[in-house]
Structures are given as C-alpha cells and as structure tokens.
Length: 237
Image (cartoon, rainbow, N blue to C red):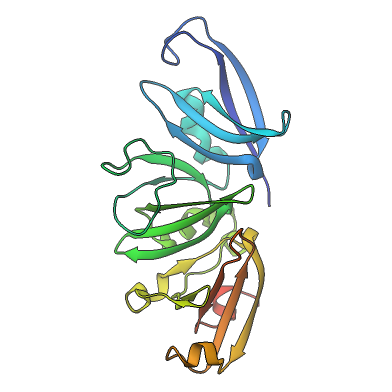
C-alpha cells in the first residue's frame, strides 16, 4: 500500500549542500510507489532518485542532509541497507566503488521482489522499480529485512521467511545452508500462489511431496518453489 514520502529538495546551490550559496529549498511529497532509492554523494550532497509524475519521467533530486536523515524514520517502508562485495549481486545499486568498497543507501521494502540468503549475513536482492529489475547484494538477511518492516504491518508488506529450493524451476544450490530464513518477498509483487503434489519437475530434482509455488509479478516473471507450506509463508492463506 502506497504511503507519502516527504523530502526537502535543493533547487539552487553553489558548491556542496548546504554550505554553498545561494540555496533555494522546496518541500516535495511523492508516493512511495514513485520512490526508487536515496544515497549519499561527495561532500554534504544527498540524493533521491524517483519518478516525477509532474514531468512523467525519472529524475534525481539533491536533498538536504537533514531530510535524508529522516527518510527512514518518517516514511514507513524505507530502510537503509549496505552493499557488499560478496554474493551473486550484479551491483546495480547506486553505491560509488561497489566493486572495491561498501556503501549505504536507502531502499523501499515494497520494491524488493525477492531477497534470498547467499552467505552468512548477506542476501542477493532483486529490486523492481517501474517494471525494471535491479540486482545487488546487501549485508542484510531476509529475516532482518522483514524485521525492518514489522512496524509497518509485516503480514501485509512482506512474506515470512522460508527456505528457497527453486527459482524459475532452477535448483538453488545453497538451499541446504539457507535455513528457515532463506528467502522473503514483498506482497506488492505477488501474482499468485498455490500448492502442487508430486510434480515431475521437482521429483526429477529429488524433491517429492507437496511443493508450494509462488508466482511474482516481475519483468522476468519469477517463480519460487519451496516445501514450506503456504500457510507459513503467507499467514492466513
């Protein structure tokens, strides 16, 4: 469910914000659906990337440090994560020097189509914004991401953690080490879910019995499969 996100945009500055002069400020509010992410730049510069419905296109806004600092506390579904150099991520995240260093940025939990554990304390994330996929690795587990959403009604926002066995009918090699906290997805990307018993696709891969299948509304139409009951993954199913 979309919420309102507010930030203070810097319209005119000479040098690093906020020390450069002159500076004009504009209070801006957008839908959380239109918030892509926020991140730090050089000096005191902070940025928000978002879809500007007024011009019908994506744009980047320079915002004040104070405004950046209050985004996660005032905007409901936003949380700060740190990129990592381990894992499978393609490093599409807006972090300078991600191949050699770590960096923090702010994401919208509702845009996380899927996050799955790749190593201890590290997840690979597929992030979908305006029907475009971004992939990156972060130093937050799926369980930690759901914890960040609890104050915003986690049952409605994100699934409970479950061990991921297949993704788009391909076996997840590290499923045996991912444990119960191996995967999580946002309900905003849920297309449908169901259960199937003794499917040959999974039997041939060594998985028998009832399998839960989850179809996500992503550009690559991800399909997740697990032996965890849907009643556990989606409370009230």
